[in-house]
Length: 310
Ligand code: FES
Image (spheres, rainbow, N blue to C red):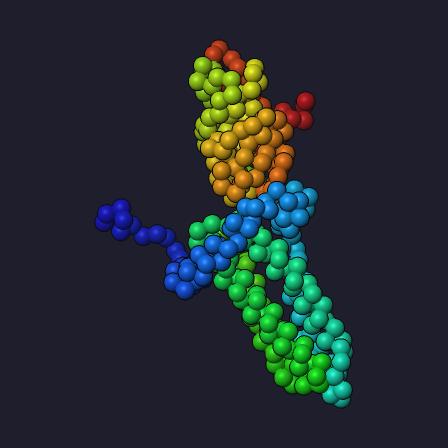
C-alpha cells in the first residue's frame, strides 16, 4: 500500500458532514462575495477600539461572541418552554406576554451576537471560514424565524407563533452545533499556546553570530516553536505560534519590540508577551534567554519542584 493509500484513521458522521459542507460550491462563492465586501471594511477599521472590543480580545480574555450567543438561545428556549406549558397568552389578545417578551429579548441579544460573530468571522481562514459562514447563515435563518414568530405572537396568531418559535429554536440549535464544531473540532478562537511548556533546561537555540542586532529567527527547541528577536544585548523569546490562530510570528515585522502577526495582524510586545492589539485574546508566553559560549540559549517554564524552591 502506498503512502497516499494509508488509512486516515477513524472518522465520524460529523466529520463527513462538515467536509461536505466545506465543499459546497455555492457556499464557497458566497464566502468570496461576502469577503470581497467585508475584508476591505475590516482592514480599514481594524485599529478601531470598538472593532477590537467586538472580538472580546485582550479585555475579555476570550471571544465576546461565544458569551453573547448564550443569550438568544436561552431566551428562545424559555419561549418554547412557556409555549409548551401553555403559559403564553391563552386568550388570543396578543401583545407581549411572557413568551413574547423572551422572544423579543432574544432578538435584541441576537443583534449583538451577529455583529460580534461577523467580526470574528472576518479573521478566520480557509475551510473554517466556509463553516463559519454556514454557522452564520443558520443563525440568521433562526433569527428570521424568531422575528416572524414574534410578529405572529403580537398579532394574536398563537399557534403559528409557537410553530415558528419551535422552528427557530431547532435551526438555532443546529447553528450552535456548527459553532461548537468550529471551536471544539477545529480549535477556532482557541488559545493555540495554552499548553506549550519546556524546555525544562537551558537549550542552545541559535549561534549568537546568526542573530545580529534587530534580527528575528524562528527556531524549534525541544519540540517547541520559539521566536527570537535581538534588540541590542537583549534577546527576546516568545512562542512562535500566534495564540490567536497559530501563524508564525517570526514571519511578521518587528518594530520597537512589538511584533505584528502576519496573518490577522495582532500585535504582541516581545518584552512581556502582552497583546498590544487584537484580535488575539491571549498573550504570548515569554521564555527566558541567555547568551553562553557564543550561543543564544532559551528555556521554558521551570519544573514545579524547582519553582517552589525559588
Ligand atoms: S493568527 Fe490571527 S492574529 Fe495571529
